[in-house]
Image 1 (tube, helix red, strand yellow):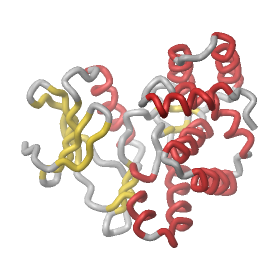
Image 2: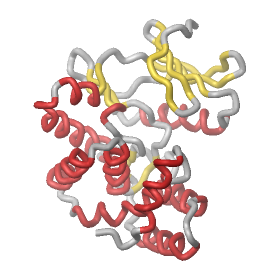
Image 3: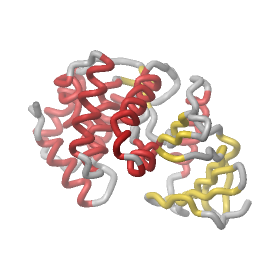
Image 4: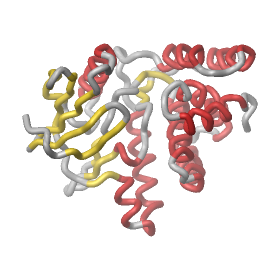
Length: 249
């Protein structure tokens, strides 16, 4: 296995390209349980029929855990949007259609989104009253069992030369309410500095899905609080500000 072509470096992991394989190598102290859970998520999502890279093996390389999957040749939607801004609306429509396709699937063995968010809210650096309000709101949200990606953004979509879209990075996948997944994507646009894109995305998703914008907005403080547990200090500060606005409209 050759690790001489780095294609991405992310938080505590490095991704390599070796022929027809993609090798994600985790840091030495990365949680073994988290690595195995990510591989299991991906294997389970394969069974839904969505276009995703197939898992080939889970192994250890020089004392570090690694997930080996198919290498998908193409460009990310983020790259395409950057290269051709005039087609951003077209790409955004495709992006929303793909997310709705994800939400149309079920995968009963995935972890439950509500359970995961409840644990994360407990860990968030928030006042006890705010955490209580967020738990109350979360508990009051309808329970669904739709596949939720958890990190659905244009850099996680690869379009091949044959125009086939592949969805990457299923480490945060859960089953639950699709509007929570939409709220997460909206916040990711904000974190990337594309506030206009965030609004365009949310308006487009709500128009296509028939989901009320206010309903997605009710999820935003919950999602922000749960996501604030990870990430750098700047991101954490931004997300905690959102989490504190429990009555956000």
